[in-house]
Amino acid sequence: MDERTERTETANEGLPSGLKRLWGTDERAQRKPRLGLSLERIVQAAIGLADADGLGAVSMSRVAERLGFTTMSLYRYVAGKDELLLLMHDAAWEPPLVLDIPDDDWRTALEKWSRELRASMQRHPWLERIRVTERMGTPSQLTWLDRGLRALAATPLGEFEKTQILLLLNGHVFADARVLADMQDAARESGVPVGEGAAAYGTAMRALADAERFPALRRAVDAGAFDPGEARRFADPDVLFTYGLERILDGVECAIRRHAGEAAES
Image (cartoon, rainbow, N blue to C red; front, side):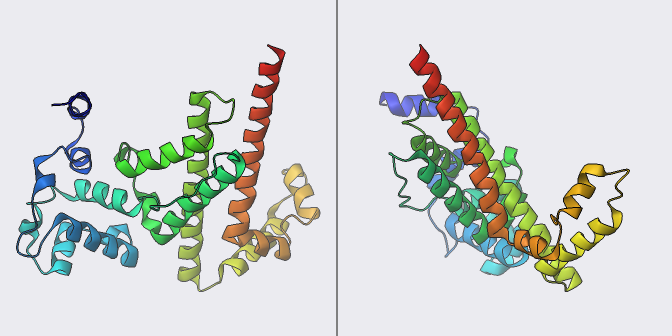
């Protein structure tokens, strides 16, 4: 056994079974397809269900039905639904094979990283419904993290600070996905397009923002911050996402300048 293999096995000793499957250290990960059924087919069928009908539609029985097998046959490959969700998340969240992130322009690199991450969420909206603790340590998560850190490698920021910036950007992407999903759900339920719903919110603000009780909000209303045109513009998910992303990157730029200044003084 070489040193790298020994180190990997030692690190994997305390991992949950699902993560061991993903890292290839669980014996079931080596099982070959049987009678047309395989782990890959199970995971892809579950992803198909989630894409079509949401995460709530995924169950071992429905996946088995989709594949034309009995529910019990799936347990040869997957321990249960929790493990299946982890495997689904890792497969659906896998970064593109080629993610051309420049190493000489941290801002362009981080913007591309964030937009590619968002594109994955848009392809599979249910990804944001899986809790953080249920997706930590997967190969996909570590790959995204590694690529993001590469984007910041040439900056004077400390390694801890770099990871916190990536967590902040990741949070922005997930919040964007959650807001978009909620807006789309509300539009489907009410039959009112997203932009019209935002305009209606502006109308409510003008009626409810009493100047005595909410003076700052009233000033914003009177200045047109909630006018129909503005409301419709900011109801555009791309406008909202881009605005937030630019402000975060502005903050990163300030931090880099501060570090550079401190280094110059020392």
